[in-house]
Length: 138
Image (cartoon, helix red, strand yellow):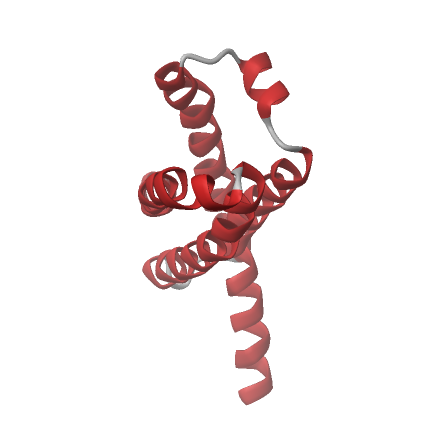
């Protein structure tokens, strides 16, 4: 159980800090040029790449874990991410949860929710894919 929590925290931390850096770049450079919606949509594939490489690292770290444990790592990391987003980030921005929901763009907001689902499932998914590749090669 301890390893599961540690891996979830590492996974969350890797993605959160990359998102933090990209968020600064997005806010300072992309938003003035393209607007909020397009800036968020431009950032999304980069974040999905970060999620992929972070999940791949976690999968290697948690080698020989069954798929369900990798699913739990992703789910716990998502829980931590959402908790951070809805407490610390909203507090820093001086927003309430309802303000946050009202200010979200419907297009980039929907893409963000899809990216959160990808974030949660990626460690499990990479393990499933690796399992199928190992069966095919053996």
